[in-house]
Image (cartoon, rainbow, N blue to C red; front, side, top):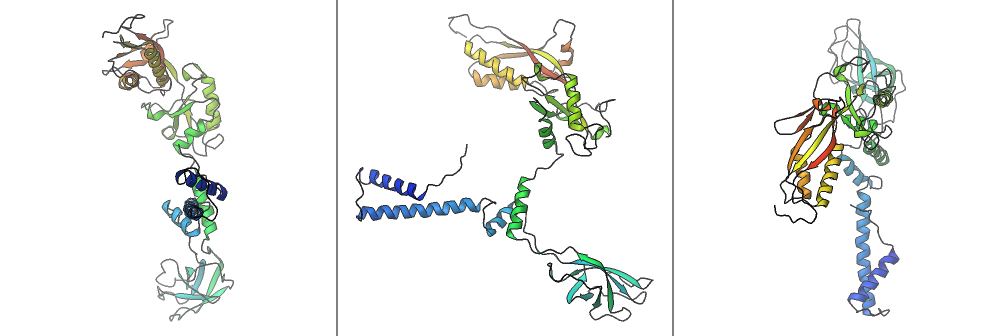
Length: 404
């Protein structure tokens, strides 16, 4: 954890130097005014004050809010923000002359005493109607000398091209070089900028729903392609929709909200109809928060003969928290559970088994939880593994010595 640097005041620094000198040099004796010790103390104070002055300056120069112009330019360039230079006036002029006459590529035009050159590739010849339009820009950048004339002249016009050109409307686009304060404002705005419609921003925005404890990108956990379901998504192509999971740990059992809550959250987040920016998300963004169902599992631990009661309780609490925060459709890996147990009981070899659980009331939730060949629990899409119970085998009776 870092703390804000607090620089001492001049008096506090003087008092500190006096105390330190008295303690470490004079064994606690007072410093006699105008003595040698008095001047040594003053020199030490001046040296520390100079160091602190440089330190304060370094801190200021590393903060874009207070940095000098040169330091600000360096700071901004590290993030790809460069000081903008002056830009010239640009606009269109009409050339007239004999059809088919070649136009010099380095043609120059004078308007209000300022020289303009072509800002794009110059047409090869005058058009069949005797007219050609050029996009030109001032040689000198900046907002001075804005062209107000309605016409200009070609410098050294070639035969077949009239010397006078017509200025088409107002010229635009000129700006002066960016000042340091303008750069500072633009750089600070850049640092404050947070892009919208990115997945991280969307997850954060969805997490503002009341009591939502976590929001996940469902496509990271559920790999099925059945994302287009009638009545769930409108105004967008299904392939382009967002698929989210929203959890409510500490509010609903297993953190899973009723469907009516998910429906309301969908309307709030995506709007209705979707894709028109009527919700919290920008125009063109649509999708759904998916309904999620629980699937229950029992965790069996064997070889726990030498675990103490405190270790058993800590293992239960740790695994309970871990499984509670497991996202929907996410696999429950035995190796991750073993690593959690190892941090609590590193000397014990504990066996682990995940058992799908059926509640005995006709809710065959175990059908949606498969145990793969590695013993990991793999739920179906849109199902979240919830902990039903623990069971420990080979535990010690009270006061029984551990021999295993």
